[in-house]
Length: 58
Image (cartoon, rainbow, N blue to C red):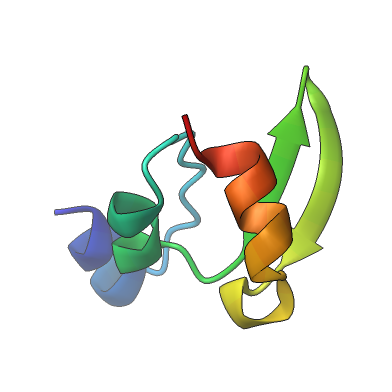
């Protein structure tokens, strides 16, 4: 349903999600935040694996 809104209706969707596999299905760009402050942004291919592991793993 989210992808349909984006593709067919041309809507912009702001998704707040901790689970990267889910977010990858829908997001074109990412902002990684730490304690409410952005620490990195860009396409997933632009973000280092170390940065992703540091901020998105439990």
